[in-house]
Length: 516
Ligand code: NAI
Ligand code: DG6
Image (cartoon, rainbow, N blue to C red; front, side, top):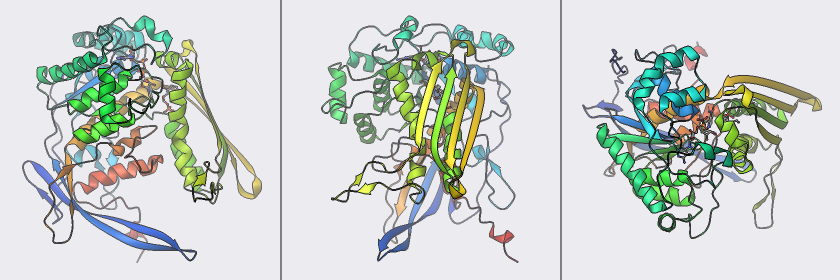
């Protein structure tokens, strides 16, 4: 299934005193430059800051498995089929197979050459589904890929067999999914379910000789879990709530806890609040990586670019109305109110920081007597509508209207209509997320302070906010700001990759082109 093709050798070697190579590691020093800004006597007072770091990246990618929860769905089967259909390892349209901006004026380099990364074809695929349909049949059920491609890949998909049985708590997904749920881990004991999932991860790792397993939620969107003090607000409370099979522990949270306890990264590709505060604390305690939420595939991705462009250009969106209809099983599940609500939240948050960043255009919130802002301040009207229309299957149709105020009180209306196979946008994001997540587990850092003895290298903070570029409602370190701007998210990711080999962040200054 995976004939080995000739791979490009690791192509970039940085020759600098900032960067050193051993057989095992790339070590690079990096100066993180920023500024402290205060307002004094009506003036912004800016003090430039610099903190020096060393990054150490393990050079050999881990032998990595990708275990998808919901592997029998449209995204899961499309991902398996596209990997199996690509034995000659053609370039896939991924972030990691794109290029990074010029290291000098003209040369771009492939992102996957900046640091060693797992090749998509080397991911060992597996996972769980509450539907027991074998994956070849599940691919046919999904009706995403062209008939002829399905026909060619069916025998390979058949070799993947049936998904592992999963956990099903009917209260969390739409009632219309019940007919699918025929492949279940028996019983209602959540502690036993947790042990079962942990054993599945260990077995998959062992059977396939893996060093790393990325556990990925691409199952149905769940309703939000209530945050209940004493239940899911701390790591210990959450573990106790699982022991007592508390009704507010969702399947996705249980999978996240299983991955964390196994020391394997977990990524949430759906919008629900899997990462209740207890999960984040548990990940911190075990230094285990998590990332989410919700794949940012089409409408929201464009919105994060367009809204930023409009606001930065001084064009003031007064309303953004986003409508879409689709006919796949995701759409069916989202036709239920509570599951739609989860998606509505993740699709709606994307313009917040751009509006907050320009309080010249939008009025800031009033400040109350104790210095606390009242409300959110001025904001465009923003609505999100999703309708289920079975006939169109996976081919989502999305309409967006941006109605804005322009110069001299004029009005501008931009209408966008997009038609596209939803799962063909989502699948590459899952691959990118799995590949980048594996990479980030191999990067360590330490602070360098003057002449002081260097600290030990430590892993990155468990919430992998560097994955934001692929996610609609990025999970970030508690207490830090969410960045929704697609350009800034990409710049952060590229700058981080370059920092790991001792290169400065991206600059479009191109000074040599501006001077004699
Ligand atoms: P799908 O409905 O085709 O697949 C979901 C699969 O999850 C189904 O096979 C279902 O049986 C299974 N499932 C449900 N609960 C489960 C559980 N507890 N354990 C194991 N399996 C379970 O949906 P699709 O299109 O593959 O999307 C998957 C998720 O990704 C959805 O939550 C969707 O909202 C999200 N998403 C999808 C995007 C897209 O463009 N397709 C983009 C952004 C997010
Ligand atoms: C319809 O909104 C179904 C959803 O699952 C979306 O297709 C998915 O979340 C992708 O959304 P977007 O806004 O990134 O295109």
